[in-house]
Amino acid sequence: MMSLFKDAVSVSHWWLQTYLTQGMVAVDATAGNGYDTVFLAGRVGPTGRVYAFDIQEEALRETRARITEQGLADRVELIHAGHERLLEYVNEPINAMVFNLGYRPRGDKRVITRPETTIEALKGGMTLLVSGGLILLTVYTGHPGGEEEWTSLRQFLVRLPKEKWQVVKLKFLNRPEKAPFNIGIQKYG
Image (tube, rainbow, N blue to C red; front, side, top):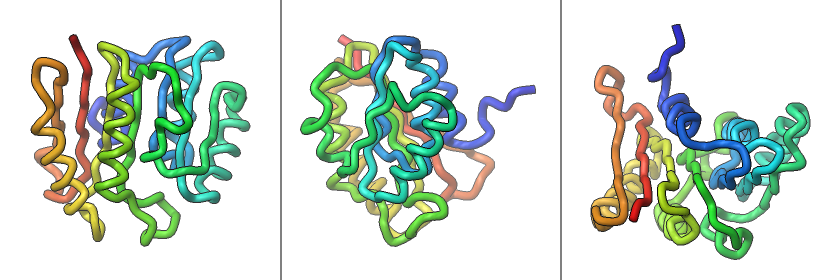
């Protein structure tokens, strides 16, 4: 039996699997070790495009190795920049955007996503997002800076007009309080 709720990243991928199809454009706002980038590139197919951002060169090397190994490099643009610079690098409508907040697993735990850059990236993504498009965030609060980032994000998200944005939070109730959780944002109208 396939577990739909194995972990927060799996939930994010499940949501994307129901929506993202060949020919679409996606953004991985936090390339990290490349797993989300590979997933997105597989979903958009050879006619789609994925833009993957990271500020760490090592993250982009890991991501490049993964997409090359899977034969997906031709549909992915790796961008060595913070996700807050999205609008400098992407100038086409996007169908989906993914954030995996916190720090890069097996990376320097002092390099973390920050509320101000994450919110700026969200604003950019919301500007480019097509009607019906999705932005998915996996939020981690169990590390230094994580709770502060979530507090700022929450303040931003609850103010989005319900006439244009649907915003949901999916949290595991039978896991530790600081366990990762999902935020899904869909544009409509």
